[in-house]
Image (tube, rainbow, N blue to C red):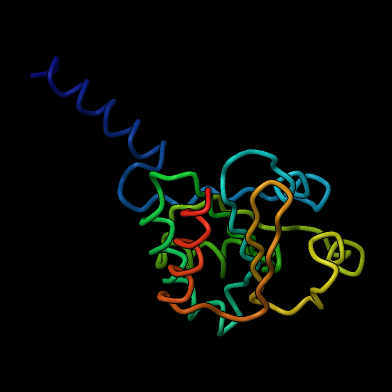
Length: 166
């Protein structure tokens, strides 16, 4: 009996420690802008959609499911979604993680921890005034930016068009 109990106990402890118990928190990278900036300039044959948002932003929350659906639909293609949260870093545990636990998305999740917005906003897009939601779609050196929230059909149409051009 002990021979069977010990492996089951060790397996259960491993699952709990690794966050595989069904309640795992999403992996969120905390980066400053210098660490994040290379993600805006990947020169390959992949289409990147970078969405700047925050869990406290109503329009951002409304469009979140459109990004979930796009990430799922295009996961097998040369498409990558990067969700960049502008939430307050001190609210990571109390606001951001609970929102993401309720609204999971298959994307790279980044919490941008850099209070110097006046410096880095123009580096993202010179036409961006800093409002969110804001999205940047790019492949190699071709960039398009969007200063509005998306609905599923609009986002899907844009991605589908760009994917078909690859």
